[in-house]
Every structure is written in C-alpha cells, then in structure tokens.
View 1: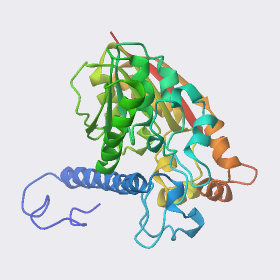
View 2: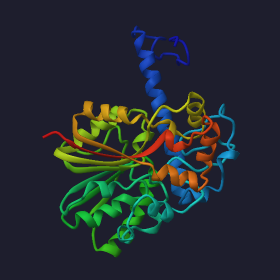
View 3: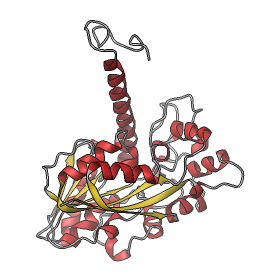
View 4: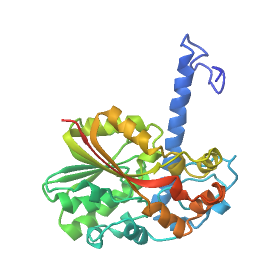
Amino acid sequence: MSTSDNTPCCGPGCCGNQSTDTPIAIDAAARDDAVRQQVRAGYAKIARSGSWSALNASVAAMPAPSQSIGCCGTSSSSKAGGGCCGSDTFTGEQLAAAIGYAQADLAAVPESANMGLSCGNPTAIAALKPGEIVLDLGSGGGFDCFIAGPKVGPTGRVIGIDMTPDMLSKARSNIALYTQQTGLGNVEFRLGEIESLPVADASVDVVISNCVLNLSPDKPRVWREIARVLKPGGRVAVSDLALLKPLPESVRADVEALVGCVAGAVLVDETRRQMVEAGLSEIVLTSKPQYVEAMTDWQDPLYQKIIASLPAGSKPSDFITSLDIAARRKD
C-alpha cells in the first residue's frame, strides 16, 4: 500500500521521517480498531434489544456485500440477522439446552442475561471449584458469570470483562437479582478489551470465554493476555467457533460482509499454535458439531446463506465447528 493512501496530513509519511513500515502498521491498527467498533456497535444493539430475535430481520434482507457490515451489526439501511453466536429463529433457552447447559445451572441466571449468544458451555469444561477466581472474556449480559458464581461460592470470585458499555450496564443491572436468588455477592463486571485485560498478572485461577475470541482481530495477543493473567498452573476453559478446513474464498468474502464470527474464526491447528506460542500447555481441543448442526436444523438465516454458497453436497459443519478448548499455564 502506498504511504499516501488514506493518510491524513501530518500523519506518518506526510510530515515526518518515519520508515515506510509505519503506515502499514498504523493501517493494521486502524483496521483492527474498525473491527472492534463494528463488533461493539452490533452487541450494543443486542444489549438494548435483549436478544437476537428482538432484532426481527433475516440475512436475506441484508444489503449486498459491497456495503459495510460488521459482526453482529448492520449498515444504516438494514437490520441484523441471525448467526454470529446467536440466532433469530430460536430462544436462548433452546440454544442453552442444545449445547449442554443443565437446567440446574440456569436456575441462578437472571432471565435477561441469556441472549442466545453461546456456542458451547465453558463452565462445564472448567470444572470450577469453591474459592477459585474466574475471569470471563466477553461476558455480555453475565450469563456464564452467573453460572460460575455458585460453583466458586462465597469464597470465590467471578470477573466479567466486556468492551461494550451497553452490555456492561445490562450485566451490572442483573447482579441484584442474582444476589437475591443465590445470596452471593461474588460477581463483578469491568469494561475492557480482551486484547488488553484490566486484570493483574498471575491473579486468576480459570479463564473462561464463550464464542468471543473469534471476534478479536488480534487473537495471538488475546492468548498472551490469557497466559499473563493466569496463575502458574491456572486453567483455560473456552468454547469458540473454529474452522475444520478453510472456507471457500467466495464464502469467506460473503461471510465477512455478513458477520465476523464465522469469517473471523481460524483453523483448529492455528488455535493450537497460538496457544503454544503464548506459553500454554496441556492443550485439549474438542470439536463439538452440535452447535453448527443446531443452527442449520433450525434454519438460521446466516447458516442458510452459507449453505447456498458452499460447494454442492457440502454443509456448514464440514467447515465450521464449535470448539471446546482446555489448557493450563505452565508452572
């Protein structure tokens, strides 16, 4: 890219003697920030509406790929559809049951915390124990935090991190009902980005996350942050979307225009590599096809659009999976 492309006056390459690498780095940073802004705007809309289904639209109504659409977001002239860790064709309760949440676990969760944004059950992977400190990346309305709270009990602590102020407000407004139902005051929520966690080094026993890491434009940095905040021997328990094999280029281009959750996912082997480089060990990656199959069976608009773009005889679960991710920080 030329140093003059989209470069503001008095920016790099205009008024200084920076190297030719600087504009490229700045362009990458600006691109990453644009992704975060799109994600933030989309999830703010979900927080305000209360669920995917409240957005009342379909992917078929979305504008052409040439228009700007971000993850879970829309252009100014359209509404959002399903997909991206959620759907407008079924309820949050139906999705939770389909991907393995026990009814007993849901008992302490305020109803408005479940917006159907899950693609797995990280609290089941985590095997949480009383007294542990748990960190939830991309905590949304607090769904998994409120499930984790009773498991770690009054001597434990659960910290949710989310970069969307509307989600943070929603989560915090749910604390009073959670405390009323459980008698516990062990959950808190902080504003922050998962690439720069507002958490001290080596202070967390378990990091959980549910269908969020795929949204990050800088996944290696997220894994380094996870390793940084974990205590030596601390655990990772993440559910996320991943690719079993590369999507056809035409599908990737289309999905990127529609929703970042699938297009932002990386291959399973790439996830493992990033974790190893971050200093994590005992890595176990388990493909769970139930989520993608449920989205397909329930005629989710995004997945129907993906099907239409795949090679003949293919289905989304041939390419996309929900991935249970378990690991430890090295001692």
